[in-house]
Amino acid sequence: MSNDTTRLFGLGGVEVVGVDVAEDDIPILALVTADEQARCCPACGVRSEHPHSWVVTRPRDLPVAGQRTDLRWSKRRWRCQNPSCRRRTFTEALPTIPPRSRLTTRLRIAIGESVANGGRTVVQAARDHEVSWPVANAAFTQVAMDVLPETTPPVEHLGIDETRRGKARFRLVEGPDGGDVWEVATDRWHIGMVDLTGGAGLLGQVEGRNATSVNQWFAR
Ligand SMILES: [Zn+2]
Image 1 (cartoon, rainbow, N blue to C red):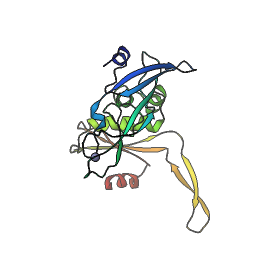
Image 2: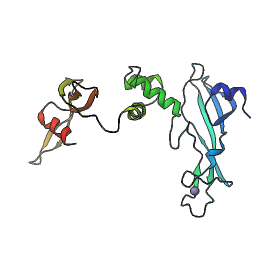
Image 3: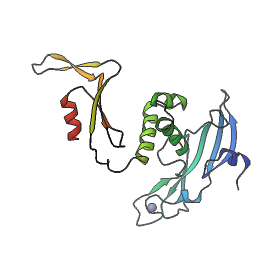
Image 4: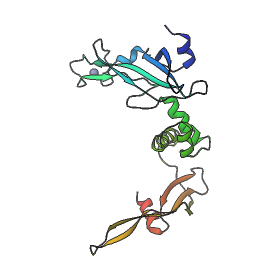
């Protein structure tokens, strides 16, 4: 049975069973699983009737009515009763909150699309949604992978150009004669490879400024 808060929240597969407000005025939504499919073993698909334990996770989600909102999802760990299945137990997962994901699917897509289609940098998208840079970058990569073709279309004219960005960083490493030598850790020069006449856009971007970097990219 769905309630008004659940309908307003609008995240498929869960029901909102309570709203608390934390000391810093951030609403905390208590969620339970409302999708029967979640108790089917991900390995064999057999539905379980034997609960094992409770787990509470805190997936990050979009703001609710423009306000940051925290989630507490109480979900079950189930025993798989299928004797031919190697999976002993599994935790509930939903298409809207996938297993091992710390973000809801809709937040991941919103972050990825703000970079892919909204012209945001990864850094800004991470700040906007209060996630780390690697999380925002992974969200963008996922959205990009979903729309990119499996194989790159044939390229007739390859464009190669270099761009300078930021400052170079160096690190001390052991040289061939045993003494310390400086090595470039982050090159300030990047080489971009583009499809000049077709529609494939940017094909690759690597650090460096010389033929070695280009050849390494070709080889890969
Ligand atoms: Zn199973």
